[in-house]
Image (tube, rainbow, N blue to C red):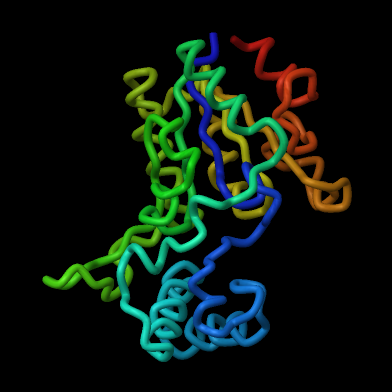
Length: 237
C-alpha cells in the first residue's frame, strides 16, 4: 500500500525547471533566474565566496533587492508564488491522494518561505526546503539552512521514520523528481525499498537518464487521470 509521495518542485510539479522569482523581474533582471547576468552573478558568488549553488542563489537575489532598494521581506521575496503554473493535473492529483490517505511531502532546494505561499502548499503534509535568517525587523539577512542535494537524504530519513517508524525503511514511499539533482534522493529511496519516478516535460529532457540511474519509471510530467504517471500510482494505492 502506498503511504507517501515525496516530490521535487521546479520541473517536477511545474513546467519550469528553474525557480521563478518574480522579485528578480522587479529588480530589473528580465526572465529572472534565467537572466544571463543573474546566472553570471551566481557563478561569481560561488567562486569568490566558496559557497554552494543554493547559498549563492539566495545571496544574489538578496543583493539584487538591496541594489533596487526593495525591502528584504517575505512579501517581496515571494512575489508571484501564488501564480505559478503547474503541470497538467497536479492539483487534482495531490488532492486525490490526500483523500485516499496518502501523504504528500515537498522536498526542494528552493526557499521554504516562497514554497509556502504557493497555492498547492496546503496539499502537502510537510514542506522541506532551504530557509533564511531574519533580523529583529523581520528583514531577511542571509541563508539559514541550504537544503542541498546530498542533504535531501537526511530529510528522507525523517520522512521514512514518520511513515514507517524506521529511517532506513522507504517501503511504500515514492519519490518523484525531474533531473540530475534528484539522483541523490532517488538513490536513497530506491536503495531502502522505495519506488522512484523521473518525470520530464518533453522527451529530450528525459534522455539524460542512464541505464544505471536509480530510477524505476521515466514518464512525462502529466498528472491527469489516465496518464502513465497516474496509472503507476493508482496501482500502488
